[in-house]
Length: 608
Image (tube, rainbow, N blue to C red; front, side):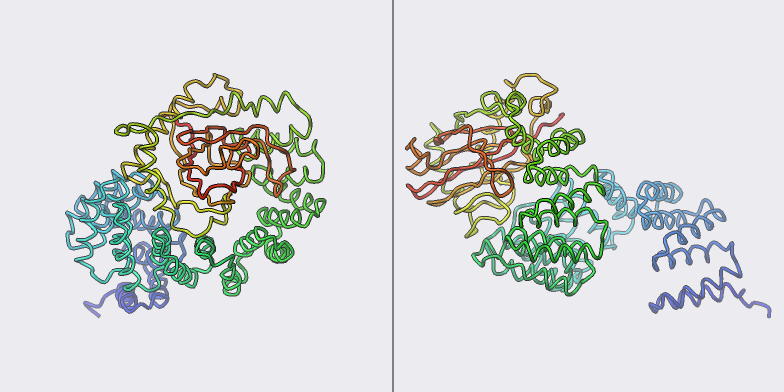
């Protein structure tokens, strides 16, 4: 009949109606029929591509949109759709190129500018992303998502105030948005306005009760502020929403412990009941059980995980740890052998394999495994620490002396106080109360080495307070002076790592009470590690029992053969002890005096 639309056009219109009604599968069926009738129609191809992408058929979506572009190569929206299909496939460079082409063909196309900004942001090109998102805002000032994306990028590049302005504009346009409220919380945290951040996150979960990231953020913020009860509740809610997220389990465990609630692993069985096939959950639970010395229960969880994933190297690794805990060294070596065969370049796993061999007095085999690991990662601090133990056990005095030369590799320095303080005593009189105010936990973290004390959360040197920034600069100057005097030796794993510059890779404060101490440990994320003494108990003055003294070379019998200390340092207020991060070190307990307050940090080299 004259004037009647072709069948494929009728199907296309019907598919549009189905999509508007949320009936995606019905729309898909109609589009497949339309494709059979008009396989080269760009409108049908483009819509079918979008539906295929929505249904998770990424390869098909990509093929369809490329076929559409062949029909209309200068049609900007098609290139924009190609970018969306490539992004869904994880091809960010390809998506970027497609969105750039769309923007070239049609500079006033909002979707091209917006999507290009998002891809650039995902690739880490934040400054360029901001330029395109500003363009998107100019093209469509009423689009809340553009203001939100721009605000997020501005926060990432450090223009936080401008980012907040953009996010507030987005909120005006979409006042019920949970994501905008969450991102405002992130921005306020960047401004160190914790109360406004907390209010924003609370608004986010009020608007979007199932927005798990906001519950986790509330938990992190409340924990940092000392609101342990509210933090625990927030973490529990996050785990209800995302039972497989291991970060929330670890944070909940730590918060309960530091609030004085003891070791509580109940979130793991709850999550495993919800996700019985989740291998990572079972592995993490086994790991935590090992830490509490519940090795037999840990073994059951590890073997249950292996039944689900028999070729998973991480689970064989954890099983090896449970067997070492039960002193079943031969079986542990078997587990680690299988793990190493599955992941021969995993240097952390190889290090634990070497530990199992050492436990079984197979020192030569352990040396071979460690040597192989250090060929892959010559600056791995944990394996360098293991090598110091092994060389001592093997009686390799020359090699051990080169690796652990306490005279050449460590130093105690008297640190100059910051400008404005007449001496260290005056500086510490102001610094100590401020530091103590940052100790909000009731107990030490479960994953740290202190016993009988507390540790600050987060990066201490990120605190903008003048006391902390003055301390940071004084300590940096001391470290820089130490590094400048190190000898040149490219073959040495400590001297040879020196770069052109330095940066702090971690910083914190520790408060030990009477009877407190540090178990012997190393710092896997550092190059140079430290101890700076702010206030000390009276017992450190006694040389006979070395109360509160710093020691190097003594191992931790929980993980290694028990070897004695080879260097002792008597602390004094204002002294900074620097040493390689792979040195075994710890602190002797003290029984005289009430408190020992220190600052510690790790430094790594940079090329800039």
